[in-house]
Image 1 (cartoon, rainbow over the protein chains, first blue to last red):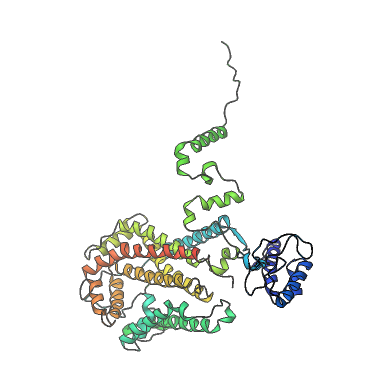
Image 2: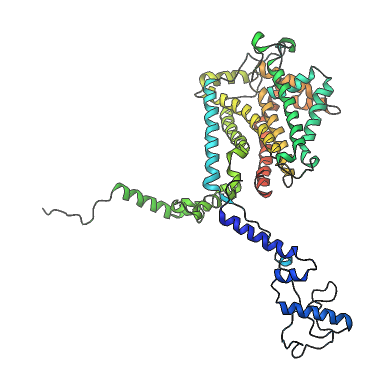
Amino acid sequence: MTEIPEHLLKRAQAAKEKASGPAESAGSDAGAAASASRIPEHLLERSRAAKAGGSAQESGGGAVAVADAPGGLIAAAPLAGGVPMGAGPGGNTQRLLTVVKSGSIQEVKATPVDKVHTWPHLLAAEFVASLACLTFVFLFSIWVNAPLLELANSNATPNPSKAPWYFLGLQELLTMFHPMIAGVTIPGVALIVLIFAPYIDKNPSNKPEDRKFATSLMTVHLMFWAVFTIIGSFFRGPGFNFVLPWVDGMFFHL
Amino acid sequence: MAKIIDEKPRPTVKDRVNDTVGFVQGSQVWSSIFRPGSIFRKGYTDSPRNRSYVIMNSVLYHLHPVKVKRHAVKVSYTLCLGGLSFFLFILLTVTGIFLMFFYRPEATAAWNDISNLQTSVTFGLLVRNMHRWGAHLMVLTTFLHMSRVFYHGAYKPPREFNWVIGIILLTLTLLLSFTGYLLPWDQLALWAVAVGTEMMGYTPVFGQEVRFVLLGGAEIGAETLLRWYVLHVLFFPFIIVIFMAIHFWRVRKDGGISGPL
């Protein structure tokens, strides 16, 4: 990843701390919770006092500072039935109904991503790449002509007869196996495994060092076809027998 | 005779051009063509807003978002292979339409048409060469694109289905190339296709039947030429355009291109 601007990094760091800070201290450590979640010290004190009192006598008074019923966030509703009248034991007229951790309702979903405008950054690159590609095809077409042999004649089989280059790996396999194996089973299995690769490969990482097996397997697979295609293209002559291109010449048309 | 003195200086060429441009850009026709905020309405000056408008208010918005991840524009990551495959497809469509003007898919005419195209049509040989080399190059770029995507692990969730679409596109590219291979109707075309379709016949259960339908008979003949011509210029391009649309749409829906590693 290339240089992320300083201010974005700072913002990401701040967002991360904000999101993970209170969640980490969600354990029973009251002191840590107090320092992390700016609840006034005296309120926490009162809540602790109320909890202690509540266990001794089943009091539902308005002085309960914090939800003490197990799991109830709004449990501070007065149980005594009346609207809390007057001041609490500390002389306060407000009471703490509940404490909601900031992480639980304010999820920081969007992590800042460093983005650039498609125009000009991406479009310019695409334009240059297309021009380069067009230039290459154009110049190649000026210098090298597409083959046009004599008129098709189904009575005159050329020797050797070769498929288009991308099927020559298959044709090479045909010299070794039964057509059912070489022409159908092997390419069929290869294609199906390739299609289902994302569902077979459960490894979630895309780091090269985490997926050595997958990359090795793919490399072996690609090399397998590359080698057979090259042999089929350049090292097979009349009768599809093995020849050396630098000795017997090329038997290959694109 | 009194001399007429111009109060105003004569308008320069620049003024006239500016007036004309202003008139055209102020007309209803012009503003009906270009959407509000489009850079073509009132000209382009480089600003973040206009950079967004270039994409947002043009047909390019179908292909690209306004902003992309910074690493996504690194040529060393994608090597432009997918984009070049698409570009080659466009190039092949353009050159292919040109070739269609001079080609009849009949066994008695096809070879002569190609031969005449090369010798007596202006740029005929050049366009045919570009079509053929472009086609081979497209097979290569789609294959390399697939390899690139694999080695980057870009087929992993959430992009699994787009990988499947990609393999279908690769197969369709091969089929397009293979059906086009027969059309020159020379010895190379006939026998390459003969060898290729012979393999197809070994597929169990339906191999022979599919081969019969595709060839329009037991052996390659005049019917095969017509069928493969229709497959090559209409059927497969139609199918591949649909799958390309899904492919490009999914790239954006799955959160842009993968990475960084």
